[in-house]
Structures are given as C-alpha cells and as structure tokens.
Length: 574
Image: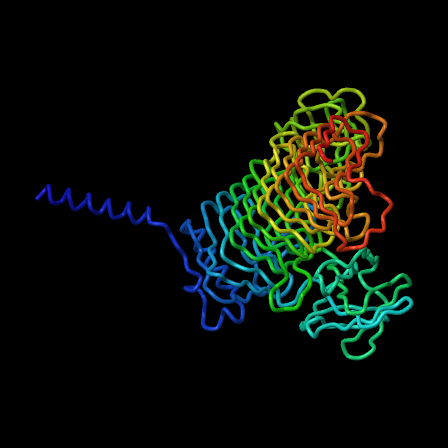
C-alpha cells in the first residue's frame, strides 16, 4: 500500500511538473467579443496581454483577418524617442518588461484608427513579433494629384479620405472625427515611376499649413511664390511630427521581427535605442496595397541609436518612405559648463534627442572636439545627475585634461553594434539609403539600391544633428546600385559618399576608416560613384560601372571618384 501511495504521489509530481513546463499559449480570439474585430479589438488586446503577464505566457496568437484597433482605449505613456517627437502616446501592444515572449500573427492585419503606436518594447528580452501587417484607416500624411500648375499656384485634387478644410485662407486636413492632421512640407512624386520626381525639392512650411482656396469639392488651389509641379504627378503633404512609430525598442535585447509588413505609421518603422541584438527578417516597408497611395510611412524605415550586439536586416524591402532606409549612429551631447576638472554640465542641442538617457556610471566615454570631430580624450563616468530632459551633470572618475571647452561633445565609447544588411531592396523613398555610423564591423551585401540621393552615406557631426559616427570596418560587396542621385542635390553627391559636417578641416586626422567596396555593379546615369573626405583606408576593386541614359545628367562633375583630406585610398578601376 505504501509503495502504491508513493507511486501515486510521484505521478502527481510528474504531472504538475509537466503542466508547469507546458508552453503557455494565449489566443486573442478567446478575448474577442462578437464583431469586436471589426469595431475595436483594443479592449481584448489589453485583457489578453494582462493575462500573458500574469501567467508568464510564451506566446500571444492573433487571429487571421483584420483587427480594427482604435486609440480610445489604448495604453498611454509619455515617451522620449530619439530622432522622433516626444509626447504622451497611445500604444496598442505595450510589451514593457516582457521576456521570452512571441506575438504571432496569422497573416493578421492590424488596422489602426487615430494617433496610436503599434508596438512598444521597453526593458524587454527575447521577444519575437511575426506574421502581421500594420496599416491605418487615415494616414498621417496627405497626398493628391496635381491637375493644374501656374505662376505661384498648384491645383490639387485629393481623394475623399483626405478631408480638406479651408480656414482663414489656409489649408488643413482632418479625419471624419475632426482630428487635424498637420503637415510641414511638400514633396512631389512621379506617378509613373512611383518615386520622388526628378531633381525635386522639399517645400518646407513654417506654420504647418499653406495659403489655399477651394476651387470645387476636393480640388484645392495651394499658393506659394516658388511652387512648381508637373500635372499628373502626386504632391505629398508630409506629416508635421514623428509621433507614432510602428515599433519602438528601448533598453531591450534579442528582439526579432519576422515576416511583418509596415504599410503605414506616423513616424519611423522601427526605432531602437540603447538596445542590443536586433534582427529584422522579411520586414517590408511599402505602400499599402490596393489603396493607390504613393507613400508607405512618414519617416525612416529603420533607425538605431546607441545600440550594441548585432543589428541584422535580411531580405527586407524599404520603399517609398519619407526618409532614409536606415540610420545607425550614436549620440553626441554638448558641454555647456565646466563646474570642476572632473565635473561637467552637458546639454542636448538637438530637440529630437531630448529626454533620451545614455550616460550611466561606469561607462567609458569619449570627449570630442565639435569642430574637427577629433577625440580629445577618453574618460569613465562616475556619477550622473539628470536635471531635466535637456541637461545632465556628469562626474568623472578622474580629472579631464586641459582644453575641454564649451560646445565640445561627449559620446559613449563602449560596444558598438555589428551590422549585417543583406538581400534588401531599397527604392523610391525620399533622401538617402543607408546612413552608417557604427564603429564595429558592418557588412552590406547582395542588396539593390535605387535611391534619389546617396545610396550609402557615412555621416556623423557635432554641430547640427549631433550624431556620433566614424566607421572603422565596412565591407560593401555584391550589391547593385541603379540610377541613384536623381533627387534633390543636397541628398547626395555620389552613390557612396561622406556627409559628415566637419567645420575645421585644417587637420589631418580622419573621422572614417577601413571601407572596402568590391564586386558591386553600378548602373548609373550620374558618373559620381564615390565622394570622400577625411577617410583613412578606402579600397575600390572588382566593381563594374555601366553608364545609362535613363535620366538626364546636367552636372559639371564627370569624375567617378572624388576624395580629399584622405589617405590610403586604393582605386582599382580601368
């Protein structure tokens, strides 16, 4: 009898252990009331996520079909997101603190209404999101067809979804609930080629509106003395602010986004700060199908700030977004006041960085001359006192050397991310392709570029954007660069170029180092292939250059290779 009892107890223990080890899978359908998918799934999402936290679930499975999600009952928190606009944000999938967790769609379409972010991942670890698409019932930008062009005016016809209001002689857009969608710039797109029009420029607007009058129904005449446009092309009224990214990742690690379409959002597609080990695989930033839109999202497809570990983007498509395909960089904060040899007040000088923390005790940092971007010294942080979103006081382990002055810079000098961008397709967007600023190894291979500005730009500066760069080990191989630099001249002066703002060019210390370009095809109408300055170590070999007549070239520069203030440059090309 005793033996039977022992066996029974053992079986109970085994059963309980097995139950505890069984993966906890939560299905959103269990929380959706009748017709809730078509009305507003946000209450069900909140309830399901709360339960996932409670039981430490491993997976939340979304149903097939379209999930309509409104901002009214979404999570809410104030967020400082680098290179975006700070604000009190509504969030649908608030995943803060989640670990070993997957959100799995079944080709699910998330259709948002209003100012709401799709995903927020703060302090997360080992989170995977896959199998879904993101779109909005009303886009954050507006776009219409140019029907007539005259001296200082354009007549533009807007589809019904862009509700036009003329107030005090100026144009405003709103949705069916009267919520205003501000705009701050105009950019013309070629309707046939589905890309920024040839050599088109941005029209920046200081008052988030433009003088206008209604000609008839949705036909609106906008007025400005320098306005130009081609009849039949699309004029895009760009969103005034970057408020709601599709994915915000902060202070997190091992984040994988697989098989996801970002058809629209009100900011960047993926923005990650102070995070590590991020992979995007088959993430597609493209205009929403069957809508007739020319624009996908309203800012960069991807953006990475002060990240570490690895950044991988494999088999992705980044098309027709209103800014770059990616920007990978660190942050520069400026010296404002020196309190003691070991104590300095630093301030953010770029409002897009307000509130972003990156300094912490024990961190190794570099102090940099803002005029030459040359490193003056290295130091270790002892104490950090954040006074407010702009100002931080830092005490160092040792006294800083003489010569540190106001407006010089501080940046982290710790682990930089290794970057792999492979098999991606980039085309039709505003401005540039890849802005590369990591000091670890970066491999750019098997990609296709058709970019209106520079396809690859090595940037970083200490006086305007305050973005730390200075590459050390870059391999660019087996890519196709096709007919770049057809857009506004300031977007790039070669397929591969340096764009760092270095006011003091009297020195000889180089900012960028170790760049190899090999086995690529350059199929171009613009002869400028490479434009470098302050680069130490650049090799160009085994590449093929094919000249085309696909666009007119009216520039004066005929050289393939331009470089100055550089050394150890090897060009192997006939």
